[in-house]
Amino acid sequence: MSNLFRDALSFPLRLLQMSTQPVTDDIEQASLILGLATLNFPEYQIQSWHQTLLTIAIVASCTFFNIFLAVRLPLVEALILVLHVAGVFAVIIPLWVMAPRGNAHDTILNFTNSGGWWSTGLASTIGAVPTAGLLIGYDCSVHLSEETEDASSTIPQVMLAAVASNAVMLLAVGITYIFCIGDLTSVLSTSTGQPVIQVLFNTTQNNAGTTIITLVIVIILLSACVGQVTTASRQLWSFARDGGAPFSRWLEVVPARWNIPLRAIIVSTMITTLLSMVNLGSNTAFNAFNSLATISILFSYTITIGCLIWRRLFGDPLPPRRWSLGKWGLPLNIISLCCTTPMLFFYVWPLTYPVTPQNMNWSSTMFAAVSFIAAIYYVIKGRHEYDGPVMLVKSNME
Image (cartoon, rainbow, N blue to C red; front, side, top):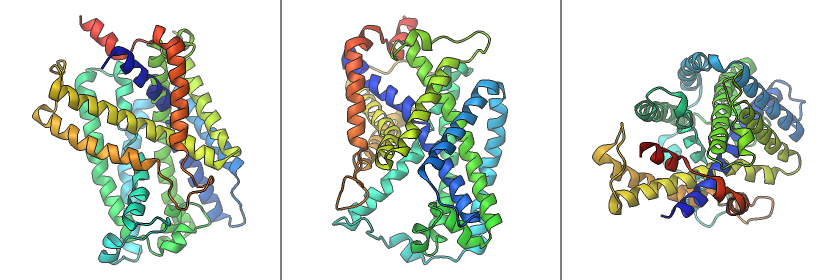
């Protein structure tokens, strides 16, 4: 693969990831909070501008933390880790004790085609793929490598530990949830707009209990938002340092007084704020922007893993590294590619059929449009200034 093709491919993907990644968690927190407001005040009606303003407030609070409390981030993350594990039990124990249990056969083997597609299997596949968003975030630690001691060994171990531990907890929560979900019709038609809130209320029959459990989820999501602002700003800063972002020379400056990429933090916050405001004009357009992060990350995963497989099979040996999967590297790469490829393919499908402009999944169109604009910028200016991190590392090694 030529350097030009490599850079042209990585350029728009990095631009898309860092621009859209923080929006998803922010809007989910806002939706949960507004859902709790509806639960406790039934006369309240959720408006799009309420959601947008609350999202902006959440982004602002996370930005405040990243600017003024950055030195406390390790301590806070450690406390949130404890809450994260405790939160799993806070959710599943009430469901175990109080919720009615579903029939194992119906819960696991009974599939419902509510999307209007011609095949239940196709409808189930399309409906399951959006959960790929749960895979986003495990690579956030990579973007903090330059601020991590012994990163080449520590970061891979941290990523594996995060995936393994969260997989176990997610399996416990997921199995509990599907067995205790109860009346699916009432859950999907809930006035709160959040099925998880309705499931918890159906279980506890208590507003206070439902609110407390949901707030645990909100706090965990808030901590994830803090980390995503950190990650997005570091991505933007490193991208500017490599000469890839517009106004790179201005963005790459790290003020000595702050010792953090202050300008990158502010700009990434402004991008997230502007994207959240799309919801005021069109919910369809906002959903398309909201899906950009998942699509771009899945696409980057697929391309990266595919290149690794090609290199392992037909290219030169991989460069020396501190941590390696050894002989398991190639099989795991192939398994990963077999997972990410269909995920990427079905993620851009509409959830319902027949397809209309309102229910159309415009994320693929948005992805192509933004990639095209980024590619034009790369051809005109970026290719003359952008020098990817791989080349920088290679030059330092030489």
